[in-house]
Amino acid sequence: MDLGILWISTGFFLASFGVALWGLRNRRQAPTPLRYGLMATGFAGQCGFLAIRGNELERCPLTNGFEILVFVSWATVLLYFVIGTPFRLSLLGFFTAPLVAGLQLLALLLPLDRRTDLGPTDFWLELHAAVSLLAYGAFALAFLAGIMFLLQDWQLKRGRLETLFYQLPAIHYLGRALQRLLLTGFTLLSVGIGSAFMMQRFPGVPKLALILLVWCGYGLVLLLHRVRGMGSRSSAIAAVLCFALPVMSYWVLTRSSL
Amino acid sequence: MRVYCLGISHRTAPVELRERLAVPDRQLSEVLDSVRDLAGVDEAVVLSTCNRVEIYAAAQQGESAADPSGALLNWLSARSPDPPGGEVFYRHASREAIEHLFSVASGLDSMVLGETEILGQLKSAYAHAHRAGATGRALNRLFQSAFRVAKRIRTQTEIARGATSVGGAGVDLAEKIFGDLRRCQVLILGAGKMSRRTAQSLQSRGASGIIVSNRSFERAQQIARVMGGQAIRFDEWTSKLDRADIVISSTSAPHHIVTAEALRPHLRQRHGRPLFLIDLAVPRDVDPAVRRLDGVYLHDIDTLQGIAHEARKRRESQIAACCELISAEADTLLSQWAGDRRLATALPSAGELARES
Image (cartoon, rainbow over all chains, first blue to last red; front, side):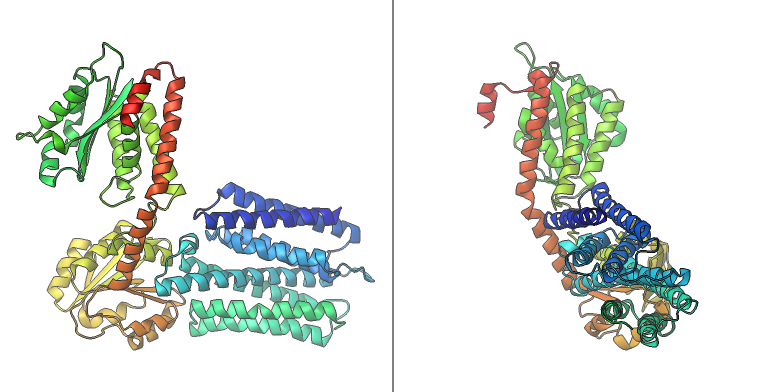
């Protein structure tokens, strides 16, 4: 049943992307209630899946690569609603929907949903995993905001005002949203790393080193912006490139026994 | 009921004639009364703008009813001390009148294709007539439809998209860079007419702080006074780069005055806030190399003219789609009227339709 809900949720995200594509093709935005409604229904499906799975496992459903992918997708949509909407970044949904649908399709189609020996529950371990993956959701959204920023920057620099130009938000809003997303992700990851030190079984040094590498990468971007006045375009490029770090850490962590 | 439209516009008459026939706001009620006193006129709306003077009227239809279009033509031409010939006026009835109103409301008949100011003027003319009791069932429905059609055309086509003037293109770009212009500071370098116009367009969209710098400080003070801004000496303008968001330059300097070297130290202080440079000078004031700087967006007169030209071309390409929408909406309105007994006679007879086509 939980997988069925996840398939339906994925369908709603794909529909949301389809509606946004239709809007771009017809050079007008689809009605706001439709766009948000599809995203919200997809999100409700994710919540339903995670609730059922969590209930079944009697812990935060982050026990294998499949659940981690779904959790990151959920975090991305959650942060899209929290951060995207107040910044009038409605088109962020256009980019978020295919990313989330893609992640969920990967989770559903690849043989990732393997049951493992779970051992005793540990509050700090669950906090560490959940908060770190929320941070990854923020970084995923920063990656998308970075792509939107670079697209808008490219059009503005060259004076080429194509259809997408009129639908993308003001570049100043994109720059601010990008910084906020990076800061949110960095703060959450700091909490995640902090809670790792409280865990009953201390994580292996290689695993911690990998997460610290992600933390340092994003920390450096924020530091350069705050202290050295790094421009928004450089921050956007950094946000896009740095996203390779969380992706790499997911790939390594789910394929090894670090 | 049958609807009529009679008038002159920038397409048929020069401004000298249009201004003679124009109806000032203070005379509107009186004019509406005298139009309604004409034989056969039951309802009326008078639209008077700088580009057109039009009367929309609804009249009973039937064998005994008089066709008011001749009386309307005589009345309108008599407003001029030197009455013009009939060829400057256009006359539309029934479906043609409906489609004409829809075109006017959508900006298709405007001097600047797709402009939206006309819709506000039309709404105001209708509101005035409605308050004066000069409209009834026919014109109420017709004008409500026109407003809906205009909105539909604006949202479903690109007829109103993109600015068609250099100043407008600058403002559009500024909004795409900053979003809300209310917190934007504008720095004007030089005293060119075009830069003042562009700054005024920015002010009209909310830009608040205006700083004027010119080689002649007295001239800068004059302009600053007119625009409600602040004047600074020409050797001080770089000190404002930390806070200025939009720089409009139109000096007569023979060399670049805004260079990457001049901007670079200030960009760090801006903490990622973009800087928009509008270079309206020929020869150019801003070194094109600044385009490479992070967060700096430069547009010169050529790129702005190019953007405005593209917008005009895009708008022209939308005319056919707009006409299709208008025709479909006219069909809808006529079929609604056919279902309304009191308005059913607004529909032209088969013979009239054949003549009109």
